[in-house]
Image 1 (cartoon, one colour):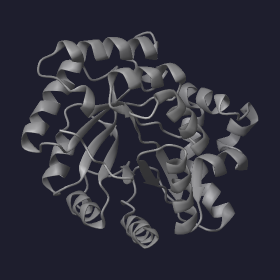
Image 2 (tube, helix red, strand yellow; image 1 turned 120 degrees about the horizontal axis):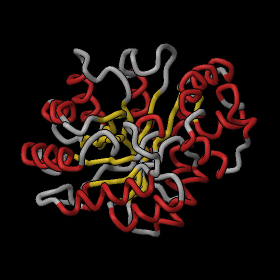
Image 3 (cartoon, helix red, strand yellow; image 1 turned 120 degrees about the vertical axis):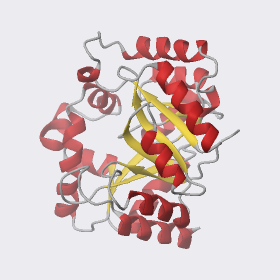
Image 4 (cartoon, helix red, strand yellow; image 1 turned 90 degrees about the horizontal axis):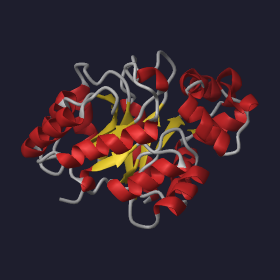
Amino acid sequence: MELDIGPVGIWGYGNWHGDDAAEAVAELDELGYRALWLGSSDGGLELHEALLAASRRIIVATAIINIWADPAARVAASYQRVERSHPGRILIGLGSSHAGMTQGQEYRPYQKMVSYLDELDALSPTVPTERRVLAALGPKMLRLAAERSAGVHPYLVTPAHTKKARDILGPGPLLAPEQKVVLETDPVKAREIARATSSLYLVAPNYANNLLRMGFTADDLADGGSDRLIDAVIAWGDTDAVLDRIAEHHAAGADHVAIQVLTAGDYGHGPLPRQQWRELAAALKART
């Protein structure tokens, strides 16, 4: 069964175990978002299954399952369980995560992904090729995704990266970048909110190396990110500014953009940004 995740979805990192999580995913469904990407996903998929049960149409994607921590057999069995209960509504995102999350194994992400996909393909039943995507950034992983998955879910990227990814993938595979956004028009406040999150990623070698490939410098990556870098990877301003950035990704070849709304406060532990989701949904509807 082919998945239709639509042009825009929500990237959710935070308190999805809270009391309002079921209510929130049901509202996302009604607002017209076609996909919810859950950050730091667990291969058991229990949370994903609960959110699917609380909604009617939305597709829930893992973003991502850490291939160093979750065995292929567990992921395949969990996928089959959820697919039986909610056919056509689960998408498996797989990624090689960071060097510090390898459980003592040598960090060779490309080789690990190849062997992991080999393990998946040796299982029956398994996660079908058309129901898995890779968290690819560099050229080798992008090419692997085009050969052995439905497509890619790049994280912390610009429309320029989206263009390069599409050139490597070709016209067929799904290209679904994540895009962080801050609905704040004051530049100082917006960048402060942005840096509180971006600083966590700019010290990770995989993201740092990708940003350097994209033309940023070591100075851009220092101290939570230069204004140039922050403005390039995080869309801030009013809803029109955010929608303009989403449109840039689509023009560069993206099929789908997963919006991650950033707000002031402790990243990942505050309330879900439901009001911002409503404002963006209304703006998307008006622009369409």
